[in-house]
Length: 462
Ligand SMILES: Nc1ncnc2c1ncn2[C@@H]1O[C@H](COP(=O)(O)OP(=O)(O)OP(=O)(O)O)[C@@H](O)[C@H]1O
Ligand SMILES: [Mg+2]
Image (cartoon, rainbow, N blue to C red; front, side):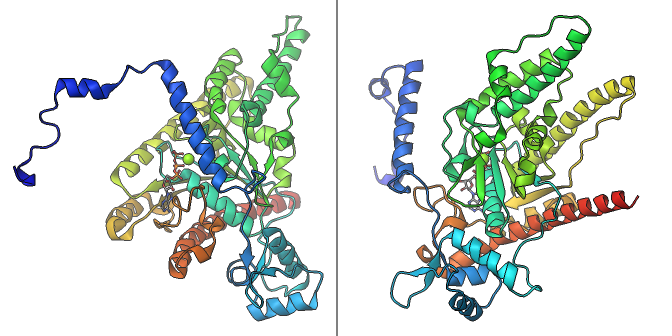
């Protein structure tokens, strides 16, 4: 038989051959073996991008990149200012007379210098109203693989490059965001879990006080809750290889929260679990120490996601311009409506009975964002989505780029890649698409801060 006459491969499979190739049945123990093999491979891969001390390091930044993307000064002026100020970081070059390279710490010092000494008409430091708390940004969609983590990580890096102090909170037990930022998380006690537990424990303490006042026996706090009461958010925060990005990481055990939270809620119906994250961050002063907090969420509308969404000021919903992603994003919004609607309804019934003010969730801005956009294939669908979603869909589409996802062994962002490893044009275009995503986001950020400032002023003038 010639090759085109050969039968497709699913004909004539002999049962003896099939049995021979099958191997022994798989047991639960085999999963442990497979998991171990994956873990060993993962460590091998992860260690290839690390320094000898096992840490991730951030690459250096050249004069070209600094003056093109980070500090808005002409290259000549930049060089003159450095020369006139020998105390400022002078950078290092690989060849004599070659381009000067700076660490990001040095870039931050240079930016502070220009902000203090340079022209007041230029924006050296991004808008950040004094006295306002950090803005919380959740990136969520219950559909998997739509670009939540990539979007959140890139926004965190662009905000950091822009000069903001950033906290990243990983609410996904897959821990992808934690890997991107080199987080080391032993167990659930190094995730947000203890903050949620502490919030519940404090609620129980309040309840118990009321019970005691009524002469009833208090509900005992178990070990988990007693330990949680001793936790402070600062002890959960890790430094990353970015000087102005910190992390509260996640790992598999965080998934336990999805089982634990409903049990707590059943035991104390009055516990406002949706306030747990915001209250805890606020009580520990975290919102005054950062400018922007990014929350990466798992592909599910579970309790952790609900906490993240309820805590968020700005909600970004990434989705690809494909029928399936559009379809399931519609259902995601439907679920948001019924989930938050039913929380409000239940609360407001209780509030009315007690003559208290009701609960009404509110977000500064909610935007769907098209990710991994391929204009040659998806323009029509994206236009249709735009027509139906209107201003809810951010008009900027984040292009598909070969620069992310395959930059070496390490999970890396565009902002972490050395542009010399790529064709300059590919780099510039890839970076443009994430810079534009950031610009669209920064517009929301500044707008919502400004609205808060105006509200504060109006309140003060009353
Ligand atoms: N702009 C882009 N261009 C090319 N590839 C991209 C882009 N954005 C994301 N990807 C790739 O798409 C895949 C899914 O992205 P990502 O992990 O960010 O999605 P996710 O929504 O966080 O997934 P999960 O639901 O599993 O948490 C990754 O392989 C990522 O590298
Ligand atoms: Mg993700």
